[in-house]
Length: 114
Image (cartoon, rainbow, N blue to C red):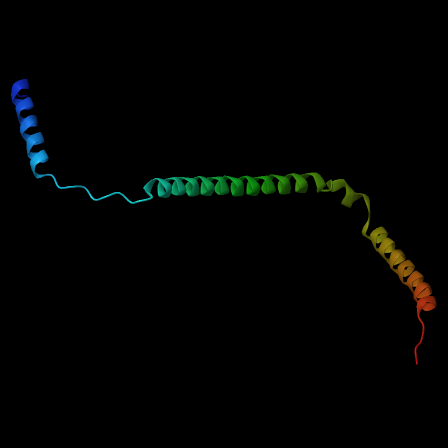
């Protein structure tokens, strides 16, 4: 397959001469080709920045959510320290106090308009 160097260079010369003779003229370039290429590159860069910004925000939010849930999770002893009866008594007492105080405060603030 390997030909002597002289025959390869001869073939190359023949090919180059053929292309010079029969090659057509290339079409003219777009008048603002440089600007179009730069704008496309800038748009691609901005899309990449947007993608990384979105990915960063989502991952930061996920980490913050998991951390907050982990930190604010009450220890299991809190629920075991109080009996259901004491919780019911606490709610009942606060309910009565809340409505008793609201009846006193709303009675003096209301005025009847005829």
